[in-house]
Amino acid sequence: MVQLYGEARSRRDIAARAGSLSQFAGVRLMTLGDGLERGIRMLEFRTGTGLRFTVLVDRALDIADCEYRGMAIGWHSPAGFRHPGLHEYEGEGGLAWLRSFSGLMVTCGLDHILFMYDEPADHYVYGPRKTVSHSIHGRVGTIPARLTGYGERWEGDECFLWCEGVVSQGTVFGEDLQLVRRIEAKVGTDEIKLSDRVVNRGFYRTPHMYCYHINVGHPVVAEGARYLAPIKDVVWAAHAGEDYCKQNVGYRTLAGPQRNFHEQVWQHELAASDEGEVPVAVVNDALGIGFEVVTRKEQFPCMYEWQNLQAGQYALGIEPSTNYVLGHAAARERGELIWLEHGDERAYDTTFRILTSGDQIAASEKRITSLAVQPAEEYPEPSGRHLPIGGRS
Image (cartoon, rainbow, N blue to C red):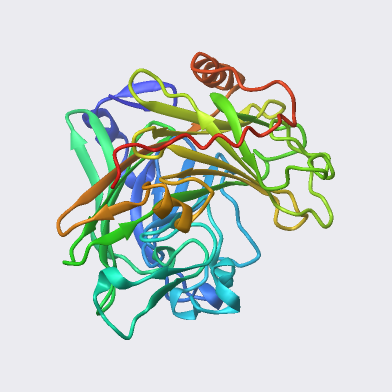
């Protein structure tokens, strides 16, 4: 049954009350028509509860807008949702990616994440190519997808909105990787399901790194909002040292927008449930609204917390990752870089959940603290313990 307006309704009940499901919920394709967004294909999802989100087909099927009953969940940066044809991957010393950085979720990869790095290219067996030059967070987030389908799917009296597409990142004498992405949202719920597969279609042994930059904005992010996670250990903080407390912003409690704030990034070692799930949330108790992300520990063993509290760019990032913040070179040296042979693939299954009341926030906090109780202090001393990630060669 579909839960709509406080009642459980059958498919027949819904059909009797409107000429089309789109009166209440649905997914539709449109094209943006002005400014730097011009020409981007976009899918708009509405689940009937007040949850609305958009998927940028021409930006790796990433999630751009996300709102609940008019309250923004996702972040809009000054860069906007820039058409990929305007993107200059190699520009600004590898930082031009920041000019396309906006939205609830930006995918990072497929063969590199984190800061710029020149990778030895001997695995591509091409003499003139000595290195592969990677800009920050990789190429995939500005590659258009081939949209393979979208629409509504009924299973008895339950209805699912969905889309699926393929994003290809390839070159001659280099990587030939493919991201197959499916997004689903059940009508009458406040959840988004994301299912990704990254496949090596080529015949070179190819590195793979992967990360989601999940960006939560105001009003969820506000002064006094809280970061909740089953933290067993605070491993690393980019700003640790003598200036650890300089900006008066700890990892747990957020401040309001700041002038001249320098980003802060933390890495936490998180506990998982018996089923292997890792929940992380950002909650605003005053408004009774929150946002929860659930990943799988074996897929994303690492988690970063990104604080960008600069006025005019105000956001908090939840960043599940295949690798530590130590970077590409360290992943190689530690034997933790994923290598894909022809036909090899990796799967990633993630749930985004809107917390729509104080009771749901309390339930989320209970789920999280049942796995591990995070440090009570705002500035726990980073341990520097980057535990080995097994099962990679």
